Image 1 (cartoon, rainbow, N blue to C red):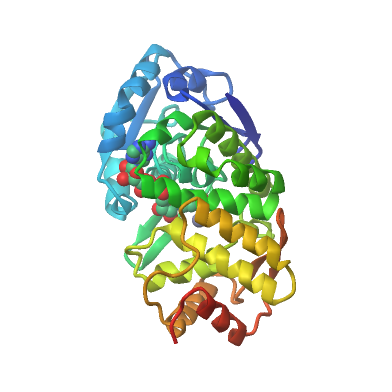
Image 2: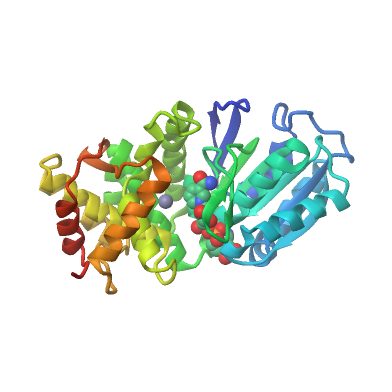
Length: 373
Ligand SMILES: NC(=O)c1ccc[n+]([C@@H]2O[C@H](COP(=O)([O-])OP(=O)(O)OC[C@H]3O[C@@H](n4cnc5c(N)ncnc54)[C@H](O)[C@@H]3O)[C@@H](O)[C@H]2O)c1
Ligand SMILES: [Zn+2]
């Protein structure tokens, strides 16, 4: 079990990773300093929010451990899929909290992936202007990415993540044991974010992934726990330095995402998972870095080889029009800062941000990864 303390404007919070943590949730939540107002045995209420599948798999040990530590629990079920991050579900959750008379000394606990965590974090940050939030992250993506760093949110009919807050959980648990039940494709797709951390910040992590690709795909729990902890540390340090995304530092977490978001958008968010889009996006960013003379081709090749060994795509496998992709990138640009910015490696473990790339070059790179004219 490893604990990472992360500083934030809402105070320091803990991210604990390791094997079999779920059964200790109650004890870890009852520890001093986790819930701001402490707990009153038998009185402090916890709203356990989960999708049915996750609740069926991990609800029992979690509820048992909360009861053993003196928490009173209520269960709130979410529908499966991204549609749980909606206005309807947000208000349904507020109403469940009201019905069960939750006040600021109680807590909302998310048991699930990024969808459950984002919705619960948003609800917890706004219900009665904020009550304690605990995130028991059950997907690899949530453990290494969405549960760390404090971003919460829901989707609006007009687009993804259009309403949200910066509100970290008081406690994040990343139990590597629960990853065994993840669907294969989701598990692999999330490995793209893990490779991302290696390329942007940690050459030793990258080498560990290269050395152990097979073992990772077999979901070796001890190895996964080590890797997850390394990723949490990287995200923690970046988020601490640029909590509200105002200084540009958090931008490096978008490595592979400028291209990746365009692929997802052009695919209509169907058929291509986020991590798969990011994987092709990193391959594209790598090629761009080589093309601009920033990154040795041999290292870009190592990145592609690793992605392929982890079962991830490095080329677009369907027909995507280059013009449509360029348009999607322009749209992404408008939403961020007005400039199209690329995070580009200069060596494995270090990236820089460039915003002066000629559209013609971007078009060529899109062609290289399989875009059609
Ligand atoms: N807040 C942030 O900083 C941040 C960062 C990245 C992504 N996100 C958001 O995260 C969301 C994606 O999260 P995700 O990839 O975790 O998807 P998800 O939450 O939809 O989970 C994927 C599926 O796996 C199921 N599941 C969860 N844990 C399981 C387990 N242990 N075993 C079996 N099945 C399990 C879920 O019920 C769901 O059907 C997106 O909405 C994205 O916008 C947020
Ligand atoms: Zn991502």
